Structure formats: C-alpha cells, structure tokens
Image (cartoon, rainbow, N blue to C red; front, side, top):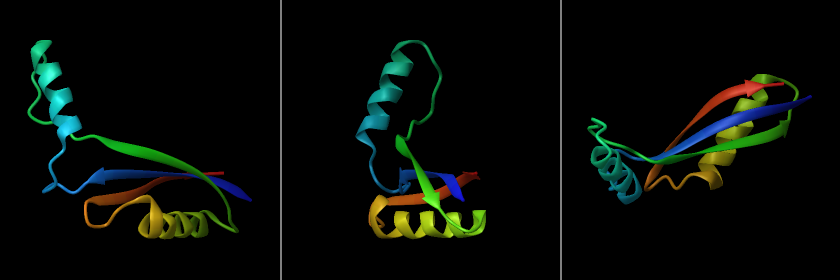
Length: 82
C-alpha cells in the first residue's frame, strides 16, 4: 500500500530565522500583534509500505538522513494517510 506522510522541518529554537523575523516585522507593520514568527517547510512523501507504522519509520529515516540538517533543523513526522 502507498501512504502519504507529512514531515515538518523547522529551525532549532537557538538558530536565527531571518525570514521569520522579516515576516514578523511586516505583520507588525500591518497592525498584527505577533511576538515571534518561525518559518519552516512541509514535505509530503508518497511512500510504499506494508503499514502506516513502516511508512512513518521510513519518513523519519529520510528526514534524519537527508530532509533536515540536524545541526540547524529539527523535524517531526506528522500525518500518515493511505
């Protein structure tokens, strides 16, 4: 079976996020009250696997080995859907 797995990648909290800061500045300029903005990316993978658990494990391995830079980023595997 093929599963669609969502992976969220974002910068570690201690890493500066210039894109997030720029968005926060613009939002404040538009009158929105925001304390902080952190930018990230969402990656959707279509993974053939025997089960949802295997698809989640494969996505986690892919993120750990390639999709996220462990020095600067962290990741979380989100939804797994058939």
